[in-house]
Image (cartoon, rainbow, N blue to C red; front, side, top):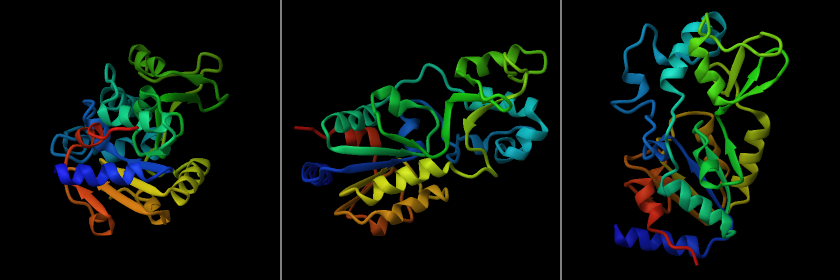
Length: 246
C-alpha cells in the first residue's frame, strides 16, 4: 500500500489540473449510508421499493409517502466532511484541483471548502416551490413532518416544494453535465473515488478524460479498474488523507 500511495503522490505532484469524480463511498465515511451496500437504502424494507419511492412519478402521485421516506432516509443531519473532502478542498486551494464532480447530494464537498463542484444529482440543501420558484432550505423540508399532510408547501403561494435532487425518471441538468464534461476533458489527472461506476449517465463521463493519469480508489473492484493507471482498493479518506501538498 505504501508503494501505491507513493505512486499517487508522484502523480499528484506532477499534475496541475486534477479533477476528482466521486460517489457514495466518499460520503459513507462521514456516516451517510449508501444505496447499494448490504446496509444501504436499497436493502431496507418499506411499503414500496426505494427506487420507486424516489422516482418522479411517485413524487407526483404520492408526495406524502415520498416525503415520509425522503425525510427519514435522505435528510442526514449532524454529519461533517471527512479526510477525503478536506484533502480535495486543500488541493483546490493550492491550485492543483480544478473541479469536483460528485454523484452525492449532501453538500459535504462545499462544507469542506471546495468551490468548483458539479453536483450531478443535485442537492438536498436546495429546495424550490414548483409554482413560483421560491427557495427553501433543508430545515424547511425537515419541519414539514409536522404539516397536516406531511408535505412542504410554499409559504408564498401554497404549492408543493420539491427538493433540487434528480429523481429517477428525471434527466440530469444540462449545464451541470456540460461543466463536468469540460472539466474532465481539460484535466491532466482524473481521480475516481468511492464509486462503483454503475450509475449512468454519470459513470459514462469518464470516457471524456484524455489526460495523463487515471486513478481509481474504491474499496471493491469496478468495471473501470483495467482502464486505470493506478488502482487502490482501500478507504478513500485513508488514501487521500495520506497525501501531502507542497
